[in-house]
Image (tube, rainbow, N blue to C red; front, side):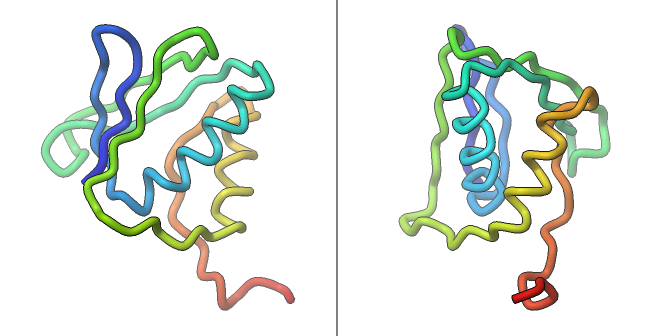
Length: 105
């Protein structure tokens, strides 16, 4: 499990390293463009206890901590789907990973 740490003092949100790697691409892309946006996430035991929103802004400190030693292989379709959400009024929220074998070539 990796962590997204946002703000100072930081809010720490745990994600699987694979999920966090995909979120990192989307978040860093948006913030490099100086685009603020919301991110929705679930928290609590097995993420069933509740949900919260963060307002992500380029001026607020952000860290991604990974606990695995290898960088996960990225799924472009998943990144694109997450990016669509991040650019919407709903904001970035975790979607199931699409099966890369079902993508058009």
